[in-house]
Length: 502
Image (cartoon, rainbow, N blue to C red; front, side, top):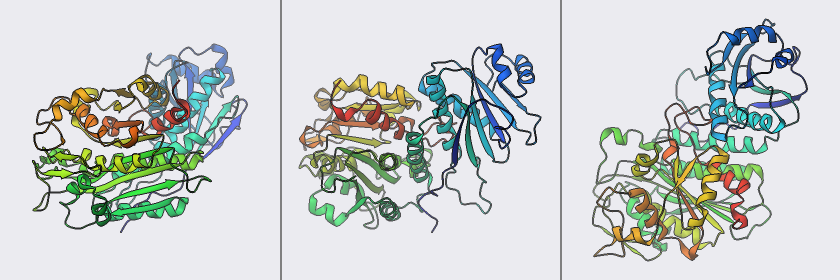
């Protein structure tokens, strides 16, 4: 069986202060030259062969990307890929710019990728260096493939050149490791990342990283009364489904969690009894990306050594057809005792998350965040460029949006609440699983899940509309984006969401 965990190697990154000169360029195979929109004439004198590059740039059309592509007349025939960006560009623009520039440089054999950022003040230089590093780390990572001749690596090392001061890239490196894990797990074929192998891979990772690990089997979940999760899992032809809990406790072995991360881990979604059509089912091995993002975020927090006690809960099962699969109009009792009238078996994500959110919030964390590829309605509302956010703290909406702008993983908030529960009224149960009408299903799903939050725990739900975007998104070059890791670190470290309201 192929490995279910990604290789641990990360490209070597070095930083060099001072002027850009011919010696600094000697080991560089490809050079990204990042320039302001208006390049001062004096700047070209700081660049080896600058007069020639300036003359070539003048022949290019305004706004072209890259702005210039040529080679230096040095021993390595260094490929130069230049791009212009406006100082003060926002995070998404910087990351997108960096991804496109990196992509333009990677059409040849992998080597040393150099980055020179010239003509900017210290803050812009630092922000652009971080964006370039993030894009290079994402591009250098290969998603799983099973070919006789594997694709060779795209970047062997990264050199940040001509910096005015060193850039702290610890957070960028940790976010990249988390994002890479999320993308790797999501891209694995469903017969390789089946429910049992997924749980085993998490156990292996927990052992390696020193995390606590517990797997709640279907038998244990039956004793707990997790009927909503088990309703979906009962269609499987074995008892491989489980809820996995990971714990990170830096120096606080028995502490209550500060943060709970919850992920939807539907490793293959047929739609169940309400079967999906072919094209809608084709990529449903990726319906576990929410759990992959939760695990990737958990890894990033651990890699950074953040002083937070964190639990990560992953709801892992398939949504199958078959004689034992749950059906429309089944009556289900969830872990918190609420009864659910099922309407559509392809609304399985909110079912498995209902019980998992209850487990997570019973631990009394300060905050729970869940991640899920949950609804088509959020795609219709936002496209695949943004993800939807929902919360039981509506005054957080400005902060949730701001974290998206700051991180470059953009979100848009939607309302939830009691008024929407009118569309989920049931004659036979406490609540309907979903509405038979298609209007606002992303809002109804959020409102439904809010009913399974214990202790009025502050809660943020991320409906991952941007989990897949053709051509890549922000700094990530693959269609599978792993959206959510950078966003969550932005909430924790920039918005300081755990430190109370601002």
